[in-house]
Image (cartoon, rainbow, N blue to C red):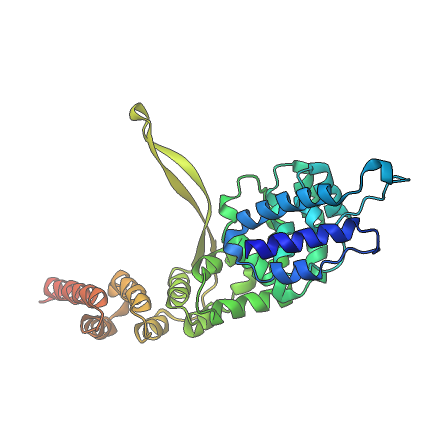
Length: 334
């Protein structure tokens, strides 16, 4: 795939300096970048930046052959130029829809650029470009960004607010909720948590808990319903455990937002206890144990059901719940 990317970048650079076209031909480059696995985005961005810069130098005619100073043509690839001034100028010049997920992601990643003026330009243009771009492209790029932005050391709160504003756009929000429910793979539990920063999941968490294909998403949704909150990792910080020996650890910073849960506790227990995945049933039995004293006579029914579960991890917690109920009954016996 690297050879295809390099070839497409060089072809694009040659079309810029050919002098035969008013607009550079991006068709091959768009096709190739649409096939890239964006889990290795750093690699592809670095490769394309280097190859594009080299190809432009090689395809530019010597100065003595140029009668007048050529007009600078800024392209989508200039948002990753080595030159920070060019990155900023390109961002402020761009208009219209991003060609594909890769190019929209390039704009999003400028929110973590090492030049403050570039971050500011990206912040000002991102919403406009997002509104002009195919919503499905925007959603895929946002999913990639949201799974990585905790590691972005330069992104600011104002930058995050822009992304959250895009997330709250009605069509984008609908697609994100559908993605949570229908995706068979990918970091959907993490996406669920990050989307919890916004109100777009409010009133939909029960639906996500019942219909999501991934068991880990259903478990995450049920936990949020039981707890009445959605929690997410805001970032990470270093914490010293023993300064004398220079020992420490990276500690996650957890934030949360309360959610209004309309479903009664008993109904939540029934739904989660009957889930086909032991991952979800473990969450169910966990909250059964927490609420044993508040459930009355139905507590034993649930406890015995879990005690006979086909998953040993769930059954073990179920037996613990039965034992705890027996202890309470002995204490309360006349």
